[in-house]
Image (cartoon, rainbow, N blue to C red; front, side, top):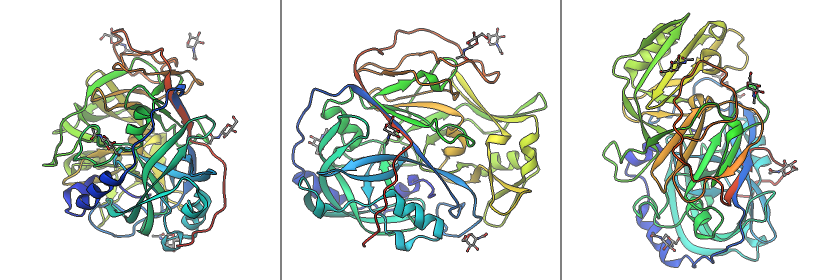
Length: 453
Ligand SMILES: *[C@@H]1O[C@H](CO)[C@@H](O)[C@H](O)[C@H]1NC(C)=O
Ligand SMILES: *[C@@H]1O[C@H](CO)[C@@H](O)[C@H](O)[C@H]1NC(C)=O
Ligand SMILES: *[C@@H]1O[C@H](CO)[C@@H](O)[C@H](O)[C@H]1NC(C)=O
Ligand SMILES: *[C@@H]1O[C@H](CO)[C@@H](O)[C@H](O)[C@H]1NC(C)=O
Ligand SMILES: *[C@@H]1O[C@H](CO)[C@@H](O)[C@H](O)[C@H]1NC(C)=O
């Protein structure tokens, strides 16, 4: 599992000039009217033991921790070729075909091969855009050739035409293709000079707005994770969705990301609640990052509370037994607090029954909330209305509905609260009800295709 690509923007490594060429060459997409309006995709959740690395800027192998990859299945080309890609709200582009031979461990190799590869020569709808680029993530890098082809979504009739994406030419430290769900050219041509998958879902009439929702589910579940494109699943949260504005670009960047204001972070230990100093900060919500990257002063407070040790690489090592403590970290946003029990905020280290890793890493620059946070939340990302809506994650079955073209309101979850989280419920009249969503399950078929790069 890589860390976020958010740091990419801080490096001059993005090959944006190369991308502009691709825009000129991209064929126009055909509008379509027959989509059901939303699509829910369950995730395939792969348990793997990649090397966890702490710093975005230092390529140091650290502990082998067990993490979960959140993959969705796509069917690319004609006839369709099945590939699985990791969902990433921290980046904007779709690419496939990591070079499995360059990964670090046997497990990663097996997962990489199982995810499948796309062979353009076997597709009658493939077009070569004759343009190349590279993406440098926080960890890992891909060099890619831009192509267009049709992309079908599983268990639906949705078959998007002429989608631009990357076929990897070379990869470093990446064992999974990536589906970037951040901003495409509609929101800001500087974010990306072509329409990405989120844009195309609207352009081709599948969804009514550039909005989708994510429930990863907790660490123990074998399934239950779901990505709903253009829709919501009220069976995945309790209380009412709280709506947060997406903040403008931060860190001197000029491109939009899913930045929201964290009002405070603190802990509740045996009923005693503390708020950490200087914890009112903008954070990026990034499903592509295993851990949360937080300022070191906050990490120091968490270290003190959990009696942790920080090793020389910045890993926060804790006793696994803290999972039994009556304690939680509280991430407070305007209108909703996500309380994460310590048992959900630690990652096991294979081969060790006593030592675990806390789901944070100190960062002096990019502050983001990764999977260790996101598993405890249900999150709606809405680019058209520049808002992120959030509620505590729960699981009480499937209750899917379209978001439609208006903003998501304070929709009430179908589940009973499993914690003492307190949210207020104003019914502001949501725009739910029309067609316009797609559910992508994060569960999938396995295909065995060997890397041929
Ligand atoms: C991580 O796992 C790999 C392969 O399983 C092994 O070679 C390596 O020594 C492990 N590293 C640590 C720090 O445990
Ligand atoms: C985005 O790029 C697509 C080509 O991928 C183009 O058709 C569309 O007009 C562009 N939209 C904006 C707002 O720039
Ligand atoms: C929620 O709690 C109420 C009252 O305890 C119960 O009747 C209902 O079935 C519960 N709903 C779910 C989804 O668990
Ligand atoms: C939730 O907040 C309301 C009003 O602020 C308060 O009356 C109620 O006791 C709270 N409930 C819980 C479970 O904390
Ligand atoms: C498609 O639906 C079948 C039957 O419900 C299910 O078993 C399978 O996992 C689904 N595939 C995907 C990729 O969602």
